[in-house]
Length: 191
Image (cartoon, rainbow, N blue to C red; front, top):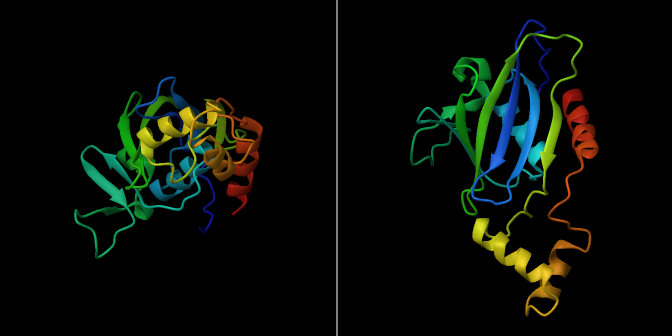
């Protein structure tokens, strides 16, 4: 993606992203420039949540779908590359949906918690806080992830060894490394 110079007069959005249907919740809080495109927000969400951008996605904002249009679209999709956040956000507490991987259907609630004044000194985007690891890609959605957690936590589960081998020994569902995420965001900003 071509890097656009940030408008230093653009407000800053404090955004909370929560993966739906999980308890305890999996979430992230970020600061992002209001002049970024929805396509850039998609890239940002992939990084902070821990996804690998291996599947299709879309935003549902006020009943309008935004994504990358294709002639195969069943429902018309507005081009996310041509729409900036500040064009569709109606202010604080504004809420919309982000869906990633139409097979596993990872639904995210995205809430604009605060609209902050411009701050040219603030490095953006930045992750402020988060809780819990992102589910592994292709685990089978909410129900598949619940089954996966059950299997990796129970050494007597018939799929324990297979699941451990598939995910690797270092997966911790409670872990979230904010420093690693912010290092990846820093690289993202240099693209």
